[in-house]
Length: 70
Image 1 (tube, rainbow, N blue to C red):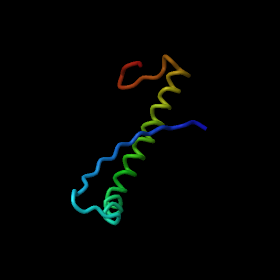
Image 2 (cartoon, one colour):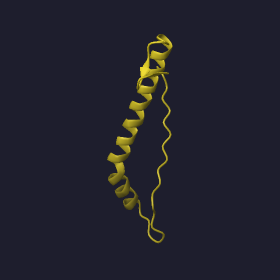
Image 3 (tube, rainbow, N blue to C red):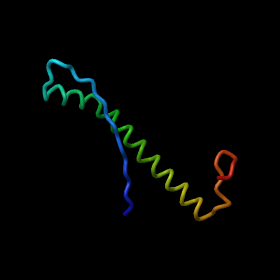
Image 4 (cartoon, rainbow, N blue to C red):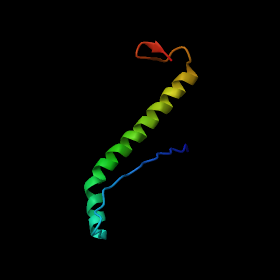
């Protein structure tokens, strides 16, 4: 099985005076769908890049992208 490494940086604005565990969970709950969307896009892009590399390696003169051979 192949490995797929995805590096994700998450930046949150945190209030300086009061920070509660419930507030952190609430914030994560709000951005969860956005994070999942970006994760799925990253996985699909990695699969796409791997498929392109396999096509290039198996048929070096056949793979054409946007009208140019790569």
